[in-house]
Image (cartoon, one colour):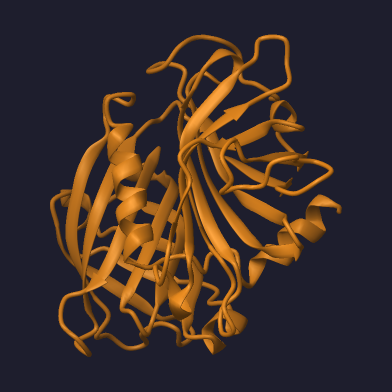
Amino acid sequence: MPVQSLARSVRAAVLRFLAVATAVTVLVVISASSALAAETKTFTGTKDCNVKPSPPDPGGFCVITKSNLEILVNAKIYYTNPDPVALASGILSSPVTLKAVDEEKSTATGHCTFYIATVLGLCVYTSGTGDLEGFHSTMAVAGVKPDTNVYSLSGTFLFDREVVTNTFTGQKECVPPASSITPPMKGGYCVFTQSNLEILLNARAYYIAAVLIPNAGPGGATALDSPIKLKTTGEEGSTATGHCTYYRPTPTTSGHGLCVYTRGTGELAGFHATLMVGPPIKTGVFSVAGTYWFDREHEGDGDHAGD
């Protein structure tokens, strides 16, 4: 499947992954990587969406009223293109642009997903300008009180002016003939049969301690949750480690998930990626899209693989 078709196939549903278990998983994984990046810090804050217009209305925004990162105090978060298909399913999924109130008019860009029924969400920022140049952040969102439209924010952030964030698109297959052992079976793995990052093509992602968690996701979805070890087919045998959570389909929700990689070896030294897994293209075959970057300064040496 062409890369553009992959991107379109995940647009409507690829970010529909968050429930309490996902938020906890993401924060634990990201926090565990803090030793690898010297500037990684904990973020806490509050955002208020009692404004006009508010999301998902055109031009809708929320205001960060409290923040332990000073530049974000009173910043506005604009939801620039809410997905109407996701919204019809009770999910606010949109690219976002954060605008600070400093003299440089600093900004940050990313994507937010919010489950209206469960009052839970996730925002991931991957770039910035001005005093927010190099800004990377993962923020879990939770309602402070029901029906108040005020939300707590918690997660991590870092500034890395040297890091270049790239877009990832690909496809992984978790069933024969690509994979002879399907997760969550012991030894189960998936194969990246398509990848715009050359080094990941035909790489295997092993689910090394997979468990099934009933009623963990939207619609009562069962979650497949596991640490991940990715192994490439190159001569160096490069690897990457992380964590994946995938919510199986239910009568009311599509299958969807998230994989976060936080370190690597060989040509994948310093590898970081946040990859959204879409609903099955067919049984055991999934579209994958997200972002990746290499942080060589804080982990290992080597050239940018595939660049």
